[in-house]
Image 1 (cartoon, rainbow, N blue to C red):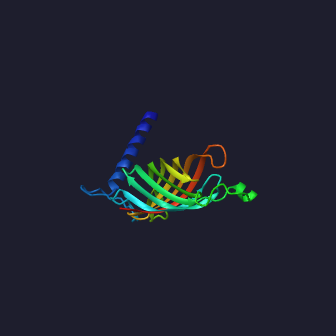
Image 2: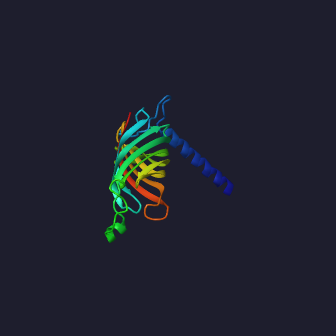
Image 3: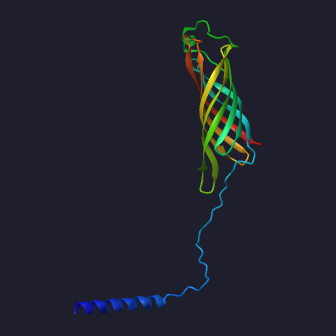
Length: 212
Protein backbone atom coordinates (compact mmCIF):
# COMPACT_ATOMS: atom_id res chain seq x y z
CA UNK A 1 0.00 0.00 0.00
CA UNK A 2 2.78 2.46 0.89
CA UNK A 3 4.51 1.87 -2.48
CA UNK A 4 1.26 2.40 -4.41
CA UNK A 5 0.50 5.58 -2.48
CA UNK A 6 3.98 6.98 -3.23
CA UNK A 7 3.65 6.18 -6.95
CA UNK A 8 0.23 7.86 -7.08
CA UNK A 9 1.67 10.95 -5.36
CA UNK A 10 4.49 11.22 -7.92
CA UNK A 11 2.02 10.92 -10.82
CA UNK A 12 -0.11 13.77 -9.40
CA UNK A 13 2.99 16.01 -9.05
CA UNK A 14 3.99 15.29 -12.65
CA UNK A 15 0.50 16.20 -13.93
CA UNK A 16 0.47 19.47 -11.97
CA UNK A 17 3.90 20.42 -13.27
CA UNK A 18 3.01 19.73 -16.89
CA UNK A 19 -0.18 21.77 -16.64
CA UNK A 20 1.78 24.68 -15.16
CA UNK A 21 4.26 24.61 -18.06
CA UNK A 22 1.41 24.52 -20.59
CA UNK A 23 -0.15 27.59 -18.95
CA UNK A 24 2.99 29.66 -19.55
CA UNK A 25 3.15 31.75 -22.71
CA UNK A 26 5.48 30.04 -25.19
CA UNK A 27 8.52 31.97 -26.40
CA UNK A 28 8.47 32.47 -30.15
CA UNK A 29 11.43 31.16 -32.07
CA UNK A 30 13.91 33.85 -33.01
CA UNK A 31 12.82 36.24 -30.24
CA UNK A 32 15.80 38.25 -28.91
CA UNK A 33 15.71 38.96 -25.19
CA UNK A 34 17.64 42.15 -24.40
CA UNK A 35 18.69 43.07 -20.84
CA UNK A 36 17.49 46.46 -19.59
CA UNK A 37 20.78 48.19 -18.70
CA UNK A 38 20.95 51.92 -18.02
CA UNK A 39 24.14 53.27 -19.57
CA UNK A 40 25.94 56.30 -18.14
CA UNK A 41 27.98 58.81 -20.09
CA UNK A 42 31.35 59.29 -18.38
CA UNK A 43 33.67 62.20 -19.06
CA UNK A 44 37.02 60.41 -19.11
CA UNK A 45 40.25 62.13 -20.18
CA UNK A 46 42.87 60.07 -21.97
CA UNK A 47 46.51 60.82 -22.67
CA UNK A 48 46.86 62.37 -26.08
CA UNK A 49 48.73 60.48 -28.81
CA UNK A 50 51.86 62.58 -28.16
CA UNK A 51 54.50 61.10 -25.85
CA UNK A 52 56.26 64.29 -24.68
CA UNK A 53 55.26 66.27 -21.59
CA UNK A 54 56.48 69.69 -20.43
CA UNK A 55 55.46 71.94 -17.56
CA UNK A 56 56.30 74.26 -14.68
CA UNK A 57 57.26 73.07 -11.21
CA UNK A 58 56.61 74.93 -7.94
CA UNK A 59 56.89 73.75 -4.38
CA UNK A 60 59.00 73.70 -1.25
CA UNK A 61 62.36 72.05 -0.64
CA UNK A 62 63.67 71.27 2.81
CA UNK A 63 67.46 71.66 2.58
CA UNK A 64 69.03 69.67 5.40
CA UNK A 65 70.51 71.98 8.07
CA UNK A 66 69.35 75.08 6.13
CA UNK A 67 65.55 75.12 6.68
CA UNK A 68 62.86 75.08 3.96
CA UNK A 69 62.65 77.37 0.94
CA UNK A 70 60.31 77.98 -2.01
CA UNK A 71 61.23 76.02 -5.13
CA UNK A 72 60.68 76.87 -8.81
CA UNK A 73 61.62 74.83 -11.84
CA UNK A 74 60.74 72.84 -14.95
CA UNK A 75 59.63 69.27 -15.56
CA UNK A 76 59.85 67.30 -18.83
CA UNK A 77 59.06 63.67 -19.57
CA UNK A 78 59.03 61.17 -22.42
CA UNK A 79 56.61 58.24 -22.16
CA UNK A 80 58.08 55.01 -23.52
CA UNK A 81 54.71 53.32 -23.08
CA UNK A 82 51.81 53.57 -20.61
CA UNK A 83 53.91 51.98 -17.84
CA UNK A 84 57.42 53.42 -18.18
CA UNK A 85 58.75 56.94 -18.74
CA UNK A 86 61.91 59.04 -18.56
CA UNK A 87 61.75 62.32 -16.62
CA UNK A 88 64.04 65.34 -16.36
CA UNK A 89 63.62 68.08 -13.75
CA UNK A 90 65.39 71.34 -12.96
CA UNK A 91 64.83 73.49 -9.89
CA UNK A 92 66.13 76.57 -8.06
CA UNK A 93 65.81 77.72 -4.45
CA UNK A 94 67.65 79.88 -1.91
CA UNK A 95 68.82 78.23 1.31
CA UNK A 96 67.93 79.80 4.62
CA UNK A 97 70.01 80.01 7.78
CA UNK A 98 71.01 77.13 10.01
CA UNK A 99 69.62 76.91 13.54
CA UNK A 100 73.13 77.77 14.85
CA UNK A 101 73.23 80.96 12.79
CA UNK A 102 69.79 81.98 14.02
CA UNK A 103 70.48 81.29 17.71
CA UNK A 104 74.07 82.54 17.96
CA UNK A 105 73.89 85.53 15.67
CA UNK A 106 77.46 84.76 14.64
CA UNK A 107 79.15 84.81 11.27
CA UNK A 108 77.14 83.02 8.56
CA UNK A 109 78.36 79.70 7.16
CA UNK A 110 77.64 80.76 3.57
CA UNK A 111 77.69 83.93 1.54
CA UNK A 112 74.55 85.11 -0.23
CA UNK A 113 75.82 83.67 -3.51
CA UNK A 114 76.64 80.32 -1.93
CA UNK A 115 73.10 80.04 -0.59
CA UNK A 116 71.79 79.68 -4.15
CA UNK A 117 70.58 76.10 -4.50
CA UNK A 118 69.95 74.54 -7.93
CA UNK A 119 69.68 71.00 -9.22
CA UNK A 120 68.94 68.90 -12.26
CA UNK A 121 68.29 65.18 -12.55
CA UNK A 122 67.19 62.54 -15.02
CA UNK A 123 65.00 59.74 -13.68
CA UNK A 124 63.45 56.49 -14.82
CA UNK A 125 59.80 56.15 -13.79
CA UNK A 126 57.14 53.47 -13.47
CA UNK A 127 53.37 54.13 -13.53
CA UNK A 128 50.58 52.41 -11.63
CA UNK A 129 47.69 53.51 -13.82
CA UNK A 130 44.17 53.92 -12.50
CA UNK A 131 41.13 56.20 -12.36
CA UNK A 132 39.92 58.89 -9.98
CA UNK A 133 36.15 59.35 -9.49
CA UNK A 134 34.88 62.74 -8.34
CA UNK A 135 31.22 61.90 -9.01
CA UNK A 136 29.37 58.99 -10.60
CA UNK A 137 29.57 60.76 -13.96
CA UNK A 138 32.94 62.51 -13.66
CA UNK A 139 36.05 60.34 -13.78
CA UNK A 140 39.65 61.10 -14.75
CA UNK A 141 42.54 58.86 -15.66
CA UNK A 142 45.25 59.03 -13.03
CA UNK A 143 48.47 57.32 -12.02
CA UNK A 144 50.66 56.81 -9.00
CA UNK A 145 54.29 56.61 -10.06
CA UNK A 146 57.76 56.05 -8.67
CA UNK A 147 61.08 57.44 -9.94
CA UNK A 148 64.77 56.71 -9.48
CA UNK A 149 67.35 59.06 -10.93
CA UNK A 150 70.68 60.84 -10.73
CA UNK A 151 72.00 64.30 -11.44
CA UNK A 152 73.84 67.19 -9.86
CA UNK A 153 73.22 69.81 -7.16
CA UNK A 154 74.97 73.18 -7.06
CA UNK A 155 75.05 74.42 -3.47
CA UNK A 156 77.57 76.01 -1.13
CA UNK A 157 79.86 76.96 -3.99
CA UNK A 158 80.30 73.37 -5.16
CA UNK A 159 78.61 70.87 -7.49
CA UNK A 160 77.67 67.56 -5.92
CA UNK A 161 76.59 64.27 -7.49
CA UNK A 162 73.00 63.63 -6.45
CA UNK A 163 70.76 60.57 -6.32
CA UNK A 164 67.01 61.20 -6.34
CA UNK A 165 64.18 58.96 -5.10
CA UNK A 166 60.63 60.05 -5.77
CA UNK A 167 56.94 59.27 -5.86
CA UNK A 168 54.10 61.18 -7.45
CA UNK A 169 50.45 61.33 -8.39
CA UNK A 170 49.30 62.43 -11.86
CA UNK A 171 45.75 63.55 -12.69
CA UNK A 172 44.78 63.96 -16.37
CA UNK A 173 42.35 66.87 -16.63
CA UNK A 174 42.08 66.63 -20.44
CA UNK A 175 43.76 64.63 -23.18
CA UNK A 176 46.64 67.15 -23.23
CA UNK A 177 46.86 68.64 -19.70
CA UNK A 178 47.84 67.03 -16.39
CA UNK A 179 48.51 67.97 -12.77
CA UNK A 180 51.31 66.37 -10.74
CA UNK A 181 51.84 66.16 -6.99
CA UNK A 182 55.33 64.89 -6.17
CA UNK A 183 57.55 63.97 -3.25
CA UNK A 184 61.26 63.57 -3.92
CA UNK A 185 64.41 63.08 -1.84
CA UNK A 186 67.68 64.52 -3.19
CA UNK A 187 70.67 62.76 -1.58
CA UNK A 188 74.22 64.10 -1.79
CA UNK A 189 77.30 64.27 0.43
CA UNK A 190 78.02 67.54 2.22
CA UNK A 191 80.53 68.83 4.76
CA UNK A 192 79.32 72.43 4.99
CA UNK A 193 78.69 72.41 8.75
CA UNK A 194 81.06 69.67 9.90
CA UNK A 195 82.15 66.21 8.91
CA UNK A 196 81.04 64.89 5.54
CA UNK A 197 77.67 63.18 5.62
CA UNK A 198 74.86 62.17 3.28
CA UNK A 199 72.16 64.82 3.37
CA UNK A 200 68.45 64.30 2.62
CA UNK A 201 66.81 67.26 0.89
CA UNK A 202 63.07 66.68 0.61
CA UNK A 203 61.13 68.30 -2.23
CA UNK A 204 57.33 68.76 -2.13
CA UNK A 205 56.27 69.75 -5.63
CA UNK A 206 53.26 70.65 -7.73
CA UNK A 207 53.37 70.97 -11.51
CA UNK A 208 51.00 71.62 -14.39
CA UNK A 209 52.12 69.96 -17.61
CA UNK A 210 51.07 69.72 -21.25
CA UNK A 211 51.48 66.89 -23.78
CA UNK A 212 52.74 67.67 -27.27
